[in-house]
Image 1 (cartoon, rainbow, N blue to C red):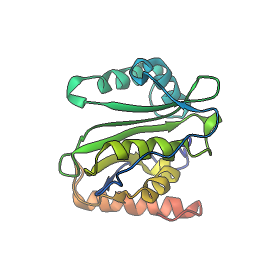
Image 2: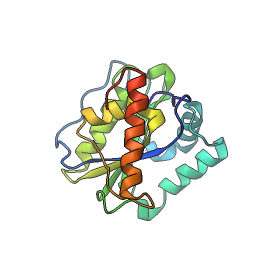
Image 3: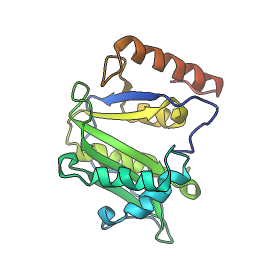
Image 4: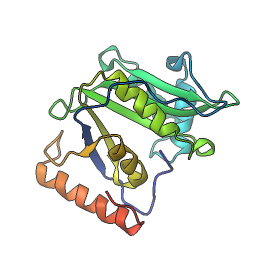
Length: 190
């Protein structure tokens, strides 16, 4: 994920990949490697989240990490380390938050600013989708993350314009219409 676009109001969106491709995740760029124990990297994860402009303090980000560690979340983390051993990219696959959309959830896709534009977000997402074993996967994103939405669509995700959580169908459609308009203002098409 690139830094959030502050020119666009924060608004949650839901996407679903009904049939994730089953197969191996692509290789990593030279010098990058998969983290051996991503579950022990909560502090690095929280720092990455705040550096990218998510609307959380560092302590709130730590709380988000603790939520992912709950047994009922059943989180599986896909973390990539950079050449210096720093946390470069993350993605988590866990139980779906909105069962009406899909049983699994891809969550917290993030790439550190110094590691962007190397295909790392795509790589961690493909690893998570491969781990889904063909089961449908949902993800929540924001209109502010329109570059990420373009990536997710290229991976097979589609806008969920039906009711989900406390969002009525009409509101879901309206949110996607606003997100498309914002992306088009930046030369992107959703």
